[in-house]
Image (tube, rainbow, N blue to C red; front, side, top):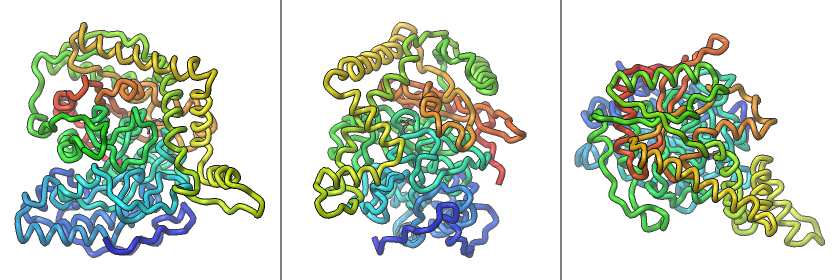
Length: 523
Ligand code: GLN
């Protein structure tokens, strides 16, 4: 691809200001209002083109992203080049020949390697990192005919639940600019919720797709561990990390799954399983559906609007003929403690590679200072406070003398949490577990930055699926109203391993019976 686009050296608050040139675009429909499948079909029919769709997306980004902060980089030139190439192919061959995404613009989280631009991972230490290659999941999007319009903002190294830990800028929630969109994939969520693109990719290590999806009114999927290749995903915690889609509805998310899933010889942890057609059956309701609702789902500490919305989801499923099976996940309460030992332990190992020599920003050292000084200065300058906290937590948990007390105990907790789910799917014979995605709706910027534990508790309902390797998804099920502002609420399904086809069908049953996914943030 052509030259590397500028990474603007400007005050984060002004980001996007330089991009406000209006692009010429006129059409009866607003292309950015179309869902992924609608837009794909419109391009395939010749009602519009990839170039027009990409221009519309770039124009919306130019107009809105200065205030939103969803993007770290926008690839105006490359995106239009990709779109022109796709349009030429559609003309010369056919829309089908171009692939399942037929020219639609999408965004990717900035921890995914792309062979142009920069892959910063939201961190100063990788601020100038140019990946020499494109990761598998992103390459699959491009092979299916998607246009990559930009890289979305994220908490540094995906550590966080609010996107405020990005070294570059916070991202705001499109429903209320005073609130965070959640995190760590907050940029990927915000750009889809505010209709800048129809779909995006995020990564989920402890909830980073599902929690922002819940906070912005989207569908977000964490596939089964191993379902999507992590080749080219900057590692955070390797036994948890998964890539997954954000979309405005279940069908669009299913289409994204069709594109990104699959075994990959470049990722030895990717599962050697076939990729089903997630979209083909998504509209088939499940007869005899049994949903497990854990006692812990109705925790009285949950926000009243979350409790109310959850009650409504359960009622909707009952009205659709589902049997609600009360279950117990007695060990879910250990999830946060186990996750915040194991994930930092893995992170402390993964992040050892940023030494300022081989990878990452290199600090200046004075005469007489040695290699150790170079390492420690580079790392101290390059890593933000949350990343440093995780490295210290992880290193401590792995150190001799503490390994058994912390790391080993956390692994045991991980096992009993997995056993709880196995019991639900086995003895209780439920198709999926239904519970809230988050205890609260989106919170205000700054509300939890001084209190790491409060931030970690955001992940109460989400980490269990990562600890167990199970597929899980969040979908919109209600609205809270705070200070007169509407804030989306999500519910979560956790399914047996590799059972995403049914998980999507179950979510689609609710979606087809309700209208939460049609709500649009104020513009
Ligand atoms: N909020 C969790 C954390 O900070 C999860 C992050 C993620 O899923 N990437 O670790």
